[in-house]
Length: 392
Ligand SMILES: Cc1cc2nc3c(=O)[nH]c(=O)nc-3n(C[C@H](O)[C@H](O)[C@H](O)COP(=O)(O)OP(=O)(O)OC[C@H]3O[C@@H](n4cnc5c(N)ncnc54)[C@H](O)[C@@H]3O)c2cc1C
Image (cartoon, rainbow, N blue to C red):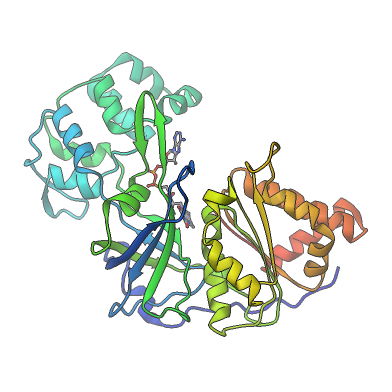
């Protein structure tokens, strides 16, 4: 194995970065919100451009933005009605500050996804035997099956009851948490902007249409001119190599491509010469090729050395990024042997493990030294922080 001296990774530029936090988010004005996916796509992925002017916010490629969502008025109204409350009842928030039930259900409490602790609390509150049985220890499988695809309103409808002390909501429901989105721009090119690439989560369960709380909030509820509460989530473990000549292999299907657009903008801005190779994939080229113009332009002007695409539904059999890795494994091994960094971003459940398998196969075959060596090689890459993943 060729031992490659680990590069020191770029670090965050200033202390300014920490002044806006999840408890004190910056209200960033939305400058643009447009669809990246074309008509007929099964997905709704949006490009969001936020104005940072005057905020003092600084970030680097590889960082994410945290966004604090709020629940929809319609969802809040339904919960208030089912609990036989008016919404104006006074309660104290997590910090003891006075607020109302309506405000608490809008900004503080998670009603969009049913948690096991909420189910246990509601079982205790109502004494309902079915819920109590689910809450018993040892019933995890049944409990998970019940929780899957359900919201707080579902359990209220299934098992209605009054809530005489509305303050109990803060014990019953988890806190509404911010969601992270990979930043898809580089401040070296656009000093006053943050771009995000957000797939709006939509699905159907238990006979109802559902949406993801935060992706729906960003994508469909805050038009250009509105504001989104954001903070920077720094990720020192997903940085470009500090050395500007080290090759970079990027695997980012779907919204996983977001940080790699930031990497390419960073290179375009003159921050490094890194030879770059991108594997991108999605369902159909005509509808789901996110940022097609950017990537094709970077390929034709030499910013991006290689672009390999995998559109799973453009032919009778499925092709994924890991298949493209396999097809190009001899060349991939040459890059890795020259010390390339290997980055993966996107789906953690299937894509990332499948990509790792393809990577191991490429090393095992083309090093000529078999699977055991491939495992060692990957372990060494991890140690040297040149096998980097940001998966979710
Ligand atoms: C480091 C990091 C970077 C990320 N970057 C991006 C990014 O660049 N772009 C992006 O779009 N997202 C990104 N995400 C994901 C993002 O943070 C959110 O998790 C995502 O937008 C969903 O949040 P939500 O509030 O819209 O959905 P939620 O309200 O949290 O609902 C999502 C939940 O709904 C359920 N669900 C979803 N689909 C179904 C279904 N078909 N059937 C049943 N249940 C279902 C699942 O339980 C799922 O956990 C990133 C995550 C991390 C951790």
